Amino acid sequence: MLQWSLTQYAVFNKTDDYLLVCGVNINGPYYNEFFMGHGAIFDMTQDFTIIRVMGMNPPHLFADWADTEVCLGGYATNHDHLTINSFKVPDKRTRMNQEPVKPPDPQEILDNTDGNRLCTFYADCNHTMNLMVANVPIKPKPLMSKCDINRNANSVIYNTDRNNSDTCIKYLIFVAGIHDCIILHKLKDVKTSKDFDEANAVRPFSYDVIRRPGQYISGMKLSHDHRYLYFNFREAVKVEENEEWEDYLHLKENLQVNVIDLQTKQIMSDIVYEGHKGFSEYPAWYICLDTSDDIVASGSEEAKAYLWDRYYRCLITTLQHKEGVVNGLEFNPKDCETMVTSGDDHTVRIWRSRNRMKTLQPVDSSYL
Figure 1 (cartoon, helix red, strand yellow):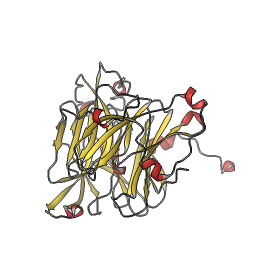
Figure 2 (cartoon, helix red, strand yellow):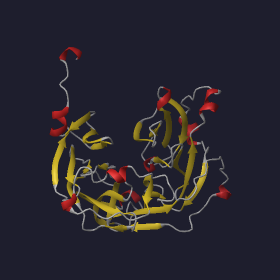
Figure 3 (tube, helix red, strand yellow):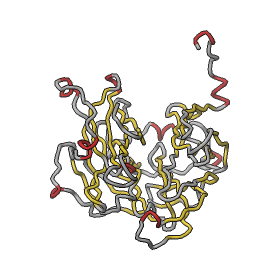
């Protein structure tokens, strides 16, 4: 449909009306002018219609929703100059008077600067990754003791209006440095009008940087209440000063998950989930992860997904694929006892707990 070489990332807006999909078109060696990132917005209420296509670079930065009708993505004007753009979902009335959006030529997407320039960062664009928007609760919520754990513990958090500026602070988050820094930039008002004058680009006068020297961050995920940021990382055995930037990092195989409290902007060093593996050399694979009320889950490069108890931090089980990397997983947002995984074995698998399986009605074989 979009003539992409690879689809990398997809996320629904809060109301599930629109789906933002990030992909890449590969026409040459990795990390060059022929490696182009794209974004597309689909209208789920209009039979999965494409309503907007955008250029988004670097491809591994991905994109996220700032609110229900505005998404944010990157546009690298040069190697060390990363601009964050906002893209507005076209108004439905306007779309009714326009012809359907057709997938443009990949070069046309690359040259597309349609969008509102929000802010500009000075960062090595080859190492920026995993852009996301967090609506962090302002009022601290008491940490739950292990004795208080139950399945309804986060019911209040799930119902919090994360778009309310009186109760939440909106942050733009992404990985930078040599994959060893996490940038936290406070967003105030996300503009939606078209304004792409480089002279008006806003350079963030202050932002927080959480540094992890000697580590390579390979994936991030927000908790459902947006207070905690979970991230995968591998330790670097050594760092070489080499003109070839690809050879900077030599990574250990052991993956670990750490947690950042976004209210305090501190790493909770006593919370670690480990056991999964990463074998790829630099630049290493993106390893996805997700959380539910009680479980932390991560992909791995050994054809498995790992599930840990979120509070006791012990390994619960692994979910096996045939081969390759498990590079996609997600809990059902309405049922934390159901999750989906996908991997390099070209399969998508649905997993349910034993408790959930008992509640399901058997399928009538006549419908198969």
